[in-house]
Length: 193
Image (cartoon, rainbow, N blue to C red; front, side, top):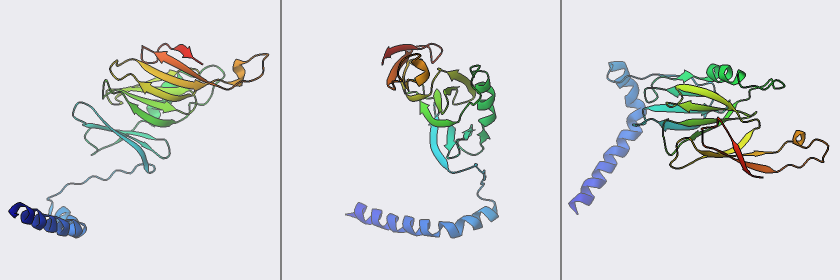
């Protein structure tokens, strides 16, 4: 009974503190008791992934497909778009001229510091050390789905749709193909279509 009464009183105090927080925060900030940092992203966050052994790193994908990384739990951010463009340019085929943009961040269940950034035009990126080291991959087509293996760090399954260019002298047939990599995208083996 005493515990119930105590919890009710704490809840009331907490509720009051929360409603007063917008009034108290500027005063505490002016007094120097609180430090804050403001960082402008180019648009609204679309996806957020915490990574690293103690979730000390964060990666954000924005609505405008920009990628940002923080090495200090979100206090400061670095935009990674130039790195994506530079590494992606090296992977373009001769007839390709567009790298595309990141659409999704995927995190490996076997290694929380390993990320895949899926792209819109066939170029995808691997982010090791929570995006500190980024390498571009060109599987040859736009990957529509990617799944990490639950225990093998470098294994994954990816699906992609066929292209009409695949059917020279035949009618175009669009269907999904399934690929396996055991080398983190360096080599792919088609296992189903």
